[in-house]
Length: 251
Ligand SMILES: NC(=O)c1ccc[n+]([C@@H]2O[C@H](COP(=O)([O-])OP(=O)(O)OC[C@H]3O[C@@H](n4cnc5c(N)ncnc54)[C@H](O)[C@@H]3O)[C@@H](O)[C@H]2O)c1
Image (cartoon, rainbow, N blue to C red):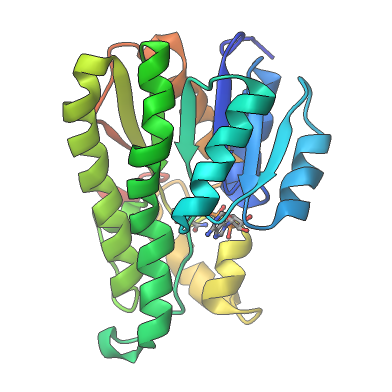
């Protein structure tokens, strides 16, 4: 493994599972000090314990402003002022017609997937500004660009992530803060269980059939793209939505 992120300190949300755990692990292997944040504090602690470089686990509900503010304070106290934040944690929805989602579920989806970026702006960006610059990586979805039926509200939250990424990139460039997003296609994570339950063979097969490279997205695929965007190799890259989708957008 190289050390493309040596000397860096990164907060990764949703690091307790799936893509977030993959990003946290790869960042640590590349030399970064990692703060593993998850609403499931035990999951964050489990992942942090297996990373090199003294990773710090923190429990936080990113939808809750007070919880987010506490997390930023604790991250700075325990790992030092971070230069990178990966906004990865999110919820999905069960496939359903547009009007068939419960209002309370929609409110929670919007709070976790969209309102959390307000908390990032209020509480995390000042840490990057004080350092004189930094890097923000947001995890969107290829479905924000190419939607499917039945996932309206989840896809709308991810379209918001695309828009927030582009606006943040434009606003924050003078502060030397780069802001980019990764747009994964369907991945092999627990999110699939939340969407399809255990009876997921056939819907997954149908989705894989729409991906030219013929497989699901793995955490390592997203981690590799995140390392690039966080590294100095991407020092002139901002406002980009990078599909990591096996060609889904061109298939
Ligand atoms: N898996 C896919 O098919 C897929 C496809 C495209 C995009 N994405 C995006 O990738 C990202 C990661 O997805 P995943 O598949 O790894 O999900 P996952 O469900 O496997 O893991 C998400 C993690 O986030 C945590 N989390 C959930 N709500 C939280 C909150 N309020 N505060 C803090 N942590 C919270 C969970 O506890 C979990 O550890 C998400 O932004 C998702 O929308 C996933």
